Length: 252
Image (tube, rainbow, N blue to C red; front, top):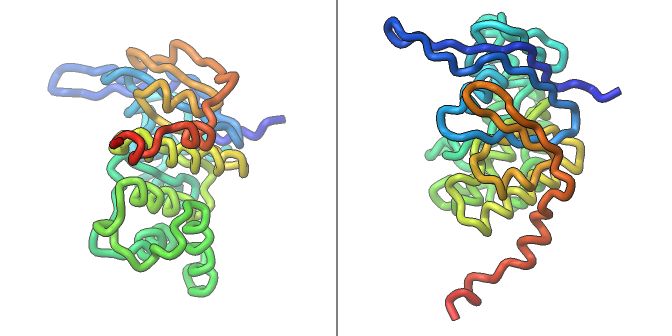
C-alpha cells in the first residue's frame, strides 16, 4: 500500500475583507503519496497559492482536515506548526529567500539551528551540509555569499537548504519563475534526480512545460480541483538540456 504523505479532506478557506467573505478554497480533497512528483497549476486567483500555504503549514484552513504523515495539523498552534514546518517540510521559493550577508554554508545550515537534529554535533552537521551541496552540484562554492552566485546557483542553495532536515516533502513555489529557460531546466533536472532517489516533491507553477516534467498535474480553478492527470512521458530535463542550443551558438 502506498504511504500517504499528504491527505487533505474537504479543505475550505474563507478570508474576511471588511464585511465581504472571499472563498479562496471551496472543498479541496487531495492525496500525495510518498515518492510522487506532483505539479499544481492554476491561473491567478485560482486558490493554488492559498492551497500551498495551507499544505506548507504557513496558514490554517477554515474547515476540513489535513494530515501530514498521519499528523492532524490543521488545528495545531503556531509553535507546533513551526516545528512541523522545520522538521517535515522543505521549502523552495521563487525569490530564493537567502540571507544576503551569510555564506552558503550558513544559509544551508539555518534549518538545523532551529532543529534538534545534529544540533550539538558540529561534525554531523558539516557532513549533512556537504551532502546537500553535493546533491545540487555546488561543492566548492560553500564560502561564497548569495550576491556572488547566479540565479540558478542561488536556487540550488535554496534546494540544498530544503533538503538539510531530510523532510517528508519538498514544496517548491514557482522555483523556475525567476530563471531563464536553460537554468530552469537545470533546476528541474535536480528535482527529477531527487525524485528518483525517492523524494516527494510538490511544485506550484503556471507554466505547463515546467509541469510536464512531473508525473502528475493537479489543476486548480475557482478554489476547487477540477482535473487531475497523469503525465505519461514526463519531459526529461537532462535530455532537453543536451538538445538546447548553447549561448555561444545563439550569438553566432
